[in-house]
Length: 239
Ligand SMILES: [Mg+2]
Image (tube, rainbow, N blue to C red; front, side, top):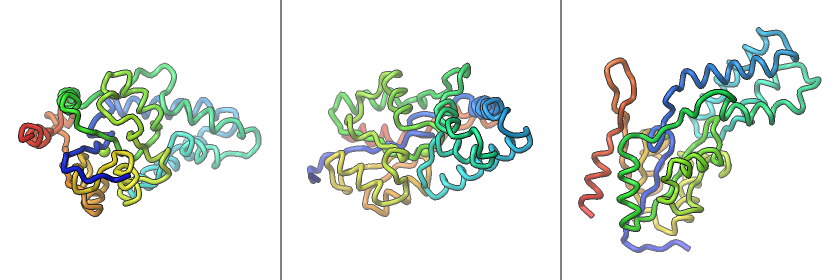
């Protein structure tokens, strides 16, 4: 049931807003190596390489329009380019391994400032949700990680929504509507915080939510060292 309470609630994006990958290049290299080894007996290296590149390209294209993708989805595209014999069992196994390549250290980390903001929102009993498009990491993986780093309690338990489970991604209005429904709030009472002008800001505003663009802060050399959460703090300080 949707309630108009006048009390503000927040919907956070996940990637680039709450969390980012510390070693994105290393993670992609580990995934590529995993694909090469897993498919080594199925096709020649050039075919496997081409399949993986096609999967990454398809995934980037899908993410640009908000199509839900997952590790299994990517693995199916790699396997789909190979000889059909003996690959039936490979895609699910490969898909699971692509989320967290064995032997590669956990690379997700909280964006600096996020833990403090979530703690303040939790202390004020402000309802918070997550609505995020997934890439290779699944919603289940991301929720377990939020729990492991101690911030899952800041969110309404059944309002952490990821596109691989929802079956639709941002900027589709139905994705925002599903999240509002889980929060039990009307759009006018909710602020969406995200790092994408297209998925987050444009998508949420089209549904009547207010928005905060949370852009990364880059150090010299392009390394991400923080995010512009000052507008979030300003909103919190105003009460
Ligand atoms: Mg994002």
